[in-house]
Image (cartoon, rainbow, N blue to C red; front, side, top):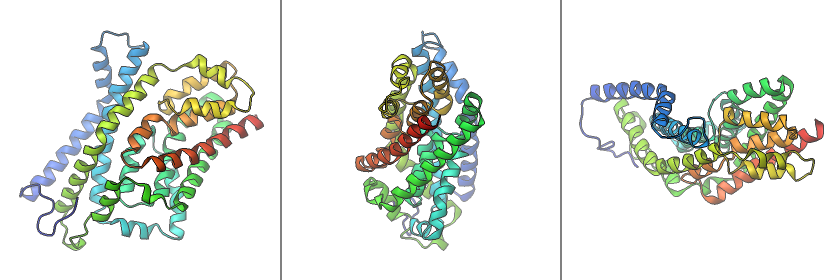
Length: 352
């Protein structure tokens, strides 16, 4: 996608007021659709000849809620970042966040993640928007890790389950993992492992037209072009990833996990992480599993490591990220985050 000097981008010659009105109508429609996600998923699930509280019913409801939610978030965030990046080219953004200011970017991104009530797949749209806007890759990873791992919903539920002291320690560890992992990955210079189309997107935006010549309608068109390009590349993988997550969500093997996490063996922590990565749920969904496991004698550190791996390193999230990151970069991301999760699990088991 490039901004052409004489025709930016080719969406017809409608008067400016039509573009503004269309954008306003689209925003209202987006909000109405987003507010109907839960009623829609419950209504659509009821159309299937299965009990709502059965494993299959849970999987169907999860899929019908999460797919439109993630696609709506992706639509909004990619469009908005596309408009914003017409003011801030990747080079300008990287210049703003370079040097000492980049150091502040890691904890700020992690703090944004803590305040954002998204699961791992819902955080991916923001991650894609940040990457396409030219924000340093390590900073974006700090957000991607913190968002699902230590979001407000999970922290609130964890506080009610184990008390404020453990919830606070969990917050500190989760925030530290997100900040340090982002910093480590930022120092590794991993931008070359982004998918080719992402690097080309960063290289081409607004290159052919001086910024001062862009009108607001031009910027809206740039945002629309970015939306169509990115959504067209990743939507099918969003559906596939969440479909896999829904199947796992509906059939959580609680008994098997208890056998792994109830023992005192050193390998219980890495085994819990290995079991948690293929699964997918949000913080609100994993807390009841954590409560059941703790109630049946599972070790706290092992259980928290499992919780972190489920919501920060889920298989569906990796499937969606594959459209933005190469397999090598995904492997590095998993290794860095898993190392922090393992350290947290071992430390909790040693102290408590």
